Amino acid sequence: MNNLGTAIVTGASSGIGAATARQLAKAGFRVVLGARRLDRLNSVAAETGGVALPLDVTDPSSVAEFVEAAGPCRVLVNNAGGAMGLAKVADADEDHWRWMWETNVLGTLRLTRALLPALVASGDGHVVTITSVAAYEVYDNGAGYTSAKHAQSALHRTLRGELLGDPVRFTEVLPGLVETEFSLVRFEGDEERAAGVYSGITPLTADDVADVVTFAVTRPPHVNLDQIVMKPRAQASATRVHRD
Ligand code: NAP
Image (cartoon, rainbow, N blue to C red; front, side):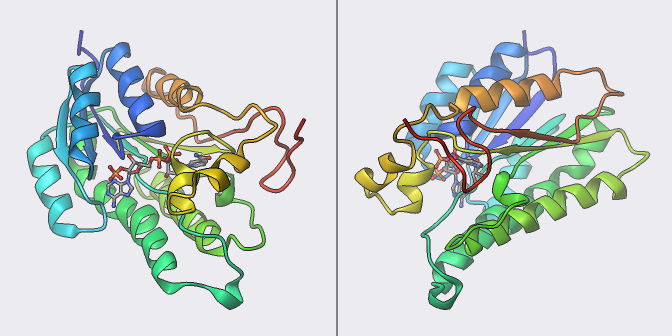
């Protein structure tokens, strides 16, 4: 296999990134995986026959080393990201905001900017960015995350126009509730609070999102899926969820 070229997945040590790495490898991509927790990244790499490389998207020198080691690629999945805390703007924690903006927004900028030449040179490049329903909705106490995801989305969608005419596609995937380590990170390890986010509903799984990413990057080169919003059936919006 490995005849579809190289796909780079950021944040592949857990959740959506790990599931995407597994499915892309199964579909025929050689996968190059980046994240900070190398032990976990190594086990995903071993499962997928891929390559694990240390990556901290908030650190420009780590990004430069990662890109250098990764080599040529055809697909980039900007997945590394997440939320930190829930607080009113009046009570905003600047460290939380910095974490969210550095990881989701500047991380996507750094990886995409560094890899665009290789993606274009491949003759059929593809950038997939995992934003969120928080990229087009706002909710109380969520401005740190919703503003970062709005900005990440704006950055991604701008590239669609700036690279028009070049052989590179841009797909934004905007998930609603997906059960991963996302809420555990957001609530800084509070398992009970994290579990409450998904109680009484059947959330999306990381594999549900990975299915969609894999579908998008396996369409013929002239087909660009621009934006894909996906939510559990029981979720109508960022703030409206039906719980049993
Ligand atoms: P997750 O299980 O917490 O995974 C987050 C991944 O991002 C981990 O692999 C983590 O790896 C990586 N990461 C975090 N900071 C990083 C950094 N500085 N450098 C490199 N990698 C970093 O959560 P997930 O749900 O799969 O999240 C994946 C993406 O989906 C995020 O962008 C998130 O905002 C988005 N999303 C999630 C949901 C949801 O409900 N779960 C909904 C919509 C969108 P290390 O900690 O090992 O570095």
